Amino acid sequence: FRSPPPRHAHCTSHPAMALHGLCSTLTGYTLLLFPLLFCPLATADLQTELYREAARSPLLTSLKADLQVLSDFVGQNRSKNHVAVLLHDANCPHCRQALPELNRVSAELTGQPIVLAHIDCTANKAVFKTPLGLRGFPALLFWRRRAEAWED
Image (cartoon, rainbow, N blue to C red; front, side):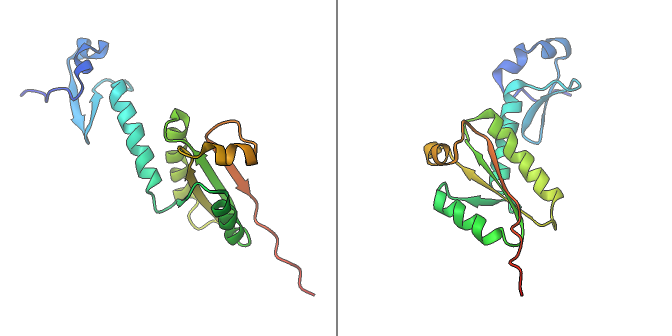
């Protein structure tokens, strides 16, 4: 029995590979068969794939990078729900971790009075930084549910 060839050239020179000589392809990602030790390039591939899946998730609303769109979305949803919006940059490693985490949380909050959305600000960072006073990304904006108007 021969193990499949490593997916990445550097896997053969990885210290754990020298010790074990084991490399397998599991669901398309090269993982070392050593507890909690992963091929660095495969881990980056996995983070990128999780980020892309979260960006397409039906549990999260994807909004266009525009202040008016954000304002309209919050105005439409705030009367009945809390609203949380993640502003992220596809090139930021922290953002690539934050979006899949928000997707995971959205699955746990299904049925709760909260609407979760995200905005990819990769191309239009300045649109949000100056008006909202943001220093960097990711940024999670939260609006509490507005109380209904009192009726006489």
